[in-house]
Length: 458
Image 1 (cartoon, one colour):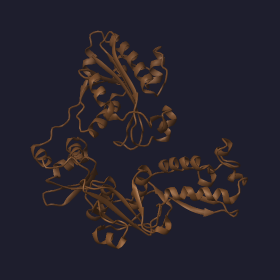
Image 2 (cartoon, one colour; image 1 turned 30 degrees about the vertical axis):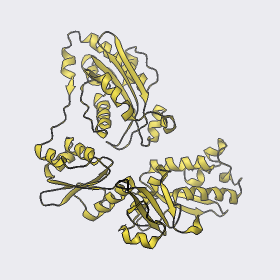
Image 3 (cartoon, helix red, strand yellow; image 1 turned 135 degrees about the vertical axis):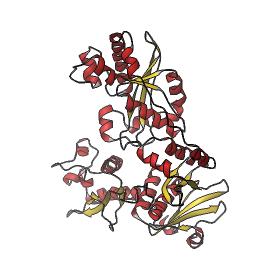
Image 4 (cartoon, one colour; image 1 turned 180 degrees about the horizontal axis):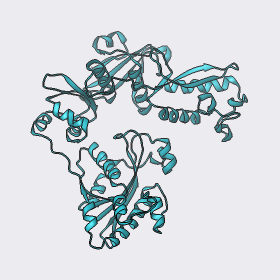
């Protein structure tokens, strides 16, 4: 029994991608016995080049089911099947990654139609799916969409099975990838680890911290470290002698705590502390005519910016969003360098600042709205989030747009008095990375409670 699968993904850094679409056709060697396809909300941004390639964008996925909602169906339709895909190592890796995030070991035998085609149909000009199936007369619609590519792969499989009548070659190319078993001492270390939100520390035999991480489910994340066969993870497995954890309740505090602890301990297996992950900043200048221009620049140590970004693609995606939201000019946002009117003006979404048709005052007013979105809402404020138990809440103190620290108070505590808060919070060194984490989190979580400390700003 075969389960022919194709997945489309967000693209991005290895191991951090997410599945945006999946299609599976179950084939018994004669007939199609089951099929399944769906868009998937990956809960992470899609790279622009992937959007252009597949036509799948974040708006299409906003109301799509998340992977965990489809996981049971995927397990059922692929059960007792050989997983077949064109470049099977990629599709299988993506499925395993998504299941690992759920704490589930997804193991199937796999068959790659690229490798099998090279053996059974040698001397073809290209083994890329589109060119290969066209050369064999197989119709292909919806290229770079899961259902279209999976259907074409199924038809290709039928041809390959016919050419390999005795199935000798197929048997050679069916691969099994087994998860490495965790040594007994690692299983013992896992026994006391909670399945909750927080920060974890892996220690060597001397007690030194060798790795720090954060997770919504600490137990599941450490299990992933101990189950992986990657070179870095194998080194961590060999060196880990103890585990300590700190539950935070709040994901934002976990992110800040992780950053702070990595900068403090400089663990040998963490790369974050070695180089700042902030690559670009947004600065403001004024033209001779008085228009406020926002420029993307390479972030420099010691410089302050309206907001910061990890990479250029993310920066451009966010600024394009704000350009459309506030009818701003792409040229005034450093996103369009051609002569004359910007491309949004041609679509009637820019009101003409690029060609000096819009009054300076009205344009600058909307620039201030954008700045308000990317800046902290108030100079002095408290961010209130979940605590470690139902009787408490977490607080993060911001003063003069700088991070002062974070901590926990009971639900009845008066959180509008900064002097009282300073006495109970864990003081944290303010830095650009910490402010970036907070601003990014607030942009994604619009419902989080923010309390101003200076009533004049309300």
